[in-house]
Length: 101
Image 1 (cartoon, helix red, strand yellow):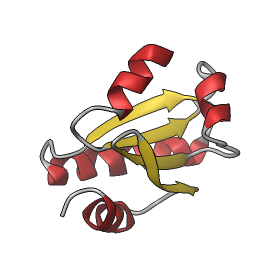
Image 2 (image 1 turned 30 degrees about the horizontal axis):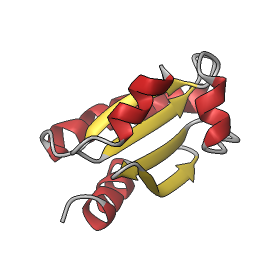
Image 3 (image 1 turned 180 degrees about the horizontal axis):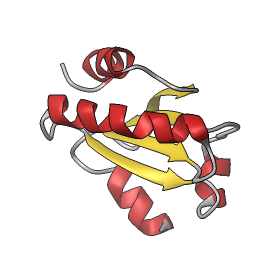
C-alpha cells in the first residue's frame, strides 16, 4: 500500500484519512459521520480509511497514537491531524479552512 498511499496523498485533490481499527468503538461511530461529510464536499476531497493494524508502518510514520485519528493531506503534506471522534461540523470547518477555499 505504501507506493499507492504516496500516490494518493500527492494527488490533485486533498485527502482526508481516517486512521481506524476494527475493534475501536469510536471509529465505528466516526464512519457514518465521514459518509455525511463526503456527501457535502461533493468530490472536492478524497476520504479514505486506513486500518492501523493492517498498515502499522503508515500509522507510525504519521505518529498515529490513538484511533480514530483524522489527518488531512494537501499536496502530500499533513495540514491538520486530530485524534478522537470528530463531529461533522468540525470536519467540514477544517476542510474549508485548510483544503478547499
